[in-house]
Amino acid sequence: MKERLQEIIRWSGMKPKQLEEATGLDRNIWISLRYGRQRVNEDHIEAVKQLWPQFSYWLVTGETIPEAGQVSPAELNTYPKVAEDKAEY
Image (cartoon, rainbow, N blue to C red):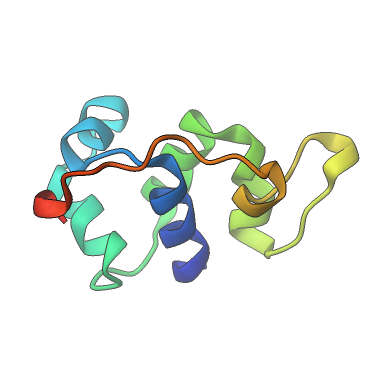
């Protein structure tokens, strides 16, 4: 699950501050998650569900159900603009 959450964070292109503002979870948590220094917990899963509901099932199971709108970032074939300033990560 850790790798899938990291993929979603990379896919989003959001910086830690943006993730904090969007979810209410401290930016340092997002940095730790990005680099695998923190285990994924229910708060992180809930945050992803709120921001990107289309990834909820894939995040938890590693499987997709495209006909139900449950996909992985790779299946979208489009990625948001990746944050160019990597200094925060």
